[in-house]
Image 1: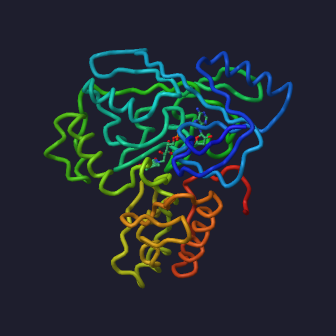
Image 2: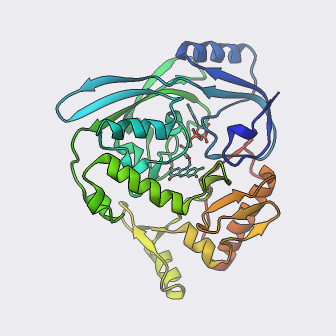
Image 3: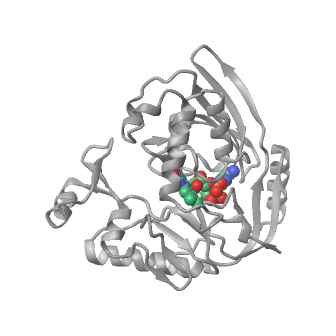
Length: 335
Ligand SMILES: Cc1cc2nc3c(=O)[nH]c(=O)nc-3n(C[C@H](O)[C@H](O)[C@H](O)COP(=O)(O)OP(=O)(O)OC[C@H]3O[C@@H](n4cnc5c(N)ncnc54)[C@H](O)[C@@H]3O)c2cc1C
């Protein structure tokens, strides 16, 4: 039995049958073969920054520890690097900005691992990891085969990918290849953050992003959370008009898709009065209503129950359904 409290950023207690760590890809293949011989539940866990354990897990927790980083291609404009899934995401970003490479700087400060970065297509401040991923290497659990996916195979979208949808639990990602730029092609994407004065270097952008994030998001070693608990809802123009007729000042953003607008889930939750509230040991972060926090000793079920209460309240008051960004483990629809 293994205690998972320190393996999830909510810091909730859950116990699993075993923790199986992999340093080499061949070890994953061997494990998968043993799984075929003796089937049992398994769950791939990176840094535990986007999961909520609501119960003990009666199976194996699979955890990659490979942290290799190699250059696989370089030309005058770009460098392509292949990175082990166990590499800590923000350490990889720090490595890239130190090398003066562009592409990851807006994704500074996101907790978790490289292996999880394509799973929900991590994003922040108008940038998504889909802009830099070239290829993902994985082990297919059903066959034990090594597979290579090009970025276009993955259907990377707003906080989603095939790994999070129809390929759920089918692959273990062991390496990801990213293409980083030696020169900044456009500074336009930094305007949204009013970063113009600091965009001379990737490090300048990273420093600014880290300082903005630390003012808005709780440090996970001080207050347990998984960052944004819900996704920002997307609505069509008819629904947007309905909401704006009641909430004139409601923020919304156009998306790349025709007639689809993104709302701010944090704003909706705040309007419903949840910001800074507390139910038992779980609560809504006082500086950002989209973040549910563990004030200490909260169980996964307490946090889950609070999230359900919030979602039901937003739907009742505003008619908007919130979808969880965080993955609930073990996966059941009701607790
Ligand atoms: C304070 C805070 C701020 C955050 N801010 C952001 C943000 O700005 N933007 C953002 O996008 N996210 C954000 N997040 C969420 C989180 O950081 C990301 O989702 C991150 O990618 C999770 O990485 P992880 O390694 O912890 O994955 P985990 O939480 O361990 O796992 C997430 C999912 O990925 C799967 N997975 C993990 N590793 C592998 C693998 N090797 N192969 C196959 N599947 C795998 C798991 O099975 C699970 O389905 C934030 C979280 C916190 C706590």
